[in-house]
Image (cartoon, rainbow over all chains, first blue to last red; front, side, top):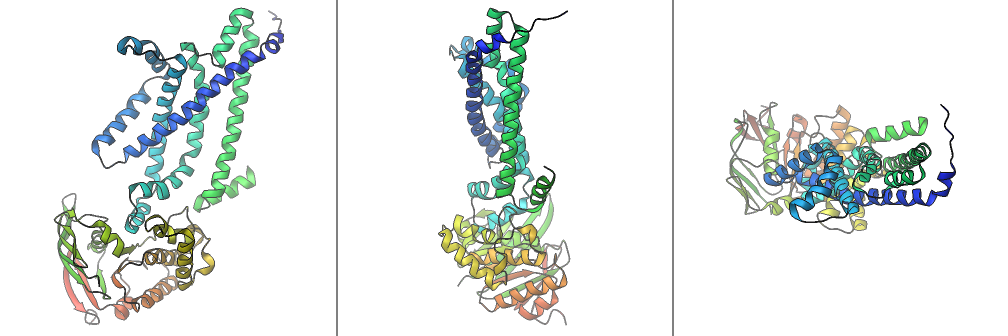
Length: 238
Length: 229
């Protein structure tokens, strides 16, 4: 069976794709900022000297990680207004859900990073008189950053791909814009293929940016031990 | 004048008593060495004095102020201001170079201007013979150099009392000798020191008093020289 490809539909509707892409990027940017702040706060609470706060943050991570993102989107968008009488726009719902999901995974990554910092490093900071926040800021986080940065950047890239799920609650992001276009042009193959190519292009660009950031970070703040060797390896073979 | 007095300090981990009713006095400028087999509780005692581990019982008086009484820390700030510690494994921060390791406490805790702190750090590094190593990160320093940076970091805070926990045991003979040389030089400055060590040379040359620990107890205390006879 032969199919008559017609990419004219793509050229004509480029502004529609770009508008959808812009919404996807807005969701990504807002969720990255909110999710990172919440994730950072939750990871700090995991090590707080209060059992209740530690328990709360662990519970938060467990529950949010256990709920499928699609389920979370549907629940917040459709069930939340019925239960509590609060209507949230589809766009805001998407940002809330993606932020919550990102924060839980990010907190878990940060937790493993924080635990990887040898307790001896904390001992020497305590002896000098640093308080908990000073130790986190000056001793722990600079070391955690270089450990978990690749992981965090991966979460951001995954988040961009997951933003397509927002289409199920009618957010006019890239996939939703494409689907709407298909319903009026009847050219699904061209439109879905082009949409997939747009996702690939953005993910490749993010991956490239992530590798630059990682490299810069390794070169600037982590010129120590194995990391310097990693930089040397990267320079030689990368 | 910052004297230190421990009275009946005890600590247990998981039911195992590590320190049993330890009492110890350290007068200003005095150098006390603590000897004993591995597992005797020497390092734990230093960790208790620096309040890295909080004793289960006993009392600690520093410069006339009670800093610990029956598990309750009463003046942590005063203790941190006056007591510094150097660890067996150096515990340098790998993401900071030698100078940054030394001045971090001054800048972050004492709020000294970074440029002033750097000047202080450089002068201490110079006294340690490490003036050309200020930009080196810990991984590129030898064990002896790392330990000298760790000592410099502790000294930058101008403590009245310095706790040294087996600072030469991870070092080769030459590095250990250079670190011992620095401690000997330091001992003439009037700073009080409690030194946990297996180095007889160090004990003979600088200790005013020597304690022997076994099974978490002080089993012997003698003036320097008597312990080896």
